[in-house]
Amino acid sequence: MKIGNSPELSSTPVGVDKPAAAQTGRTAANGGGAPVGGKKTPEASAKLELSTNATQLLQGVPDDGSFDAAKVGRISQAITEGKFTVNANVIAEKLIANAQEMLGRMTPH
Image 1 (spheres, one colour):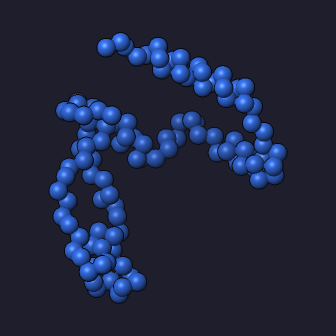
Image 2 (cartoon, rainbow, N blue to C red):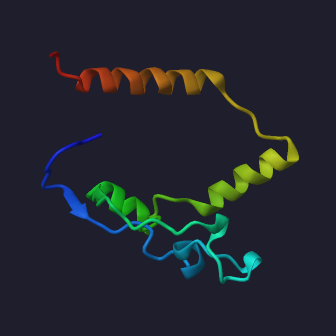
């Protein structure tokens, strides 16, 4: 987590596209006339800044081929049919490789 004034940070409003009922605290269940719980919704008092990576994640899945919907469908079908098998050795090897990579990136204090 980064704290401070980073050039990577951008000011991106979060939750701007909420429905009006969610913003005002009113719901159709209570007639839409009174705030939920009888309380007024507080005004926003903080500004949230997101990194460029977080902003990209909020924009959705990129269409660069990194998401294989067909593969997800095949795996989902195999799980549903009870045919999906987990290779614990492969998972363990990848976990160890990822840990070694992360440890290699760390700098001593």
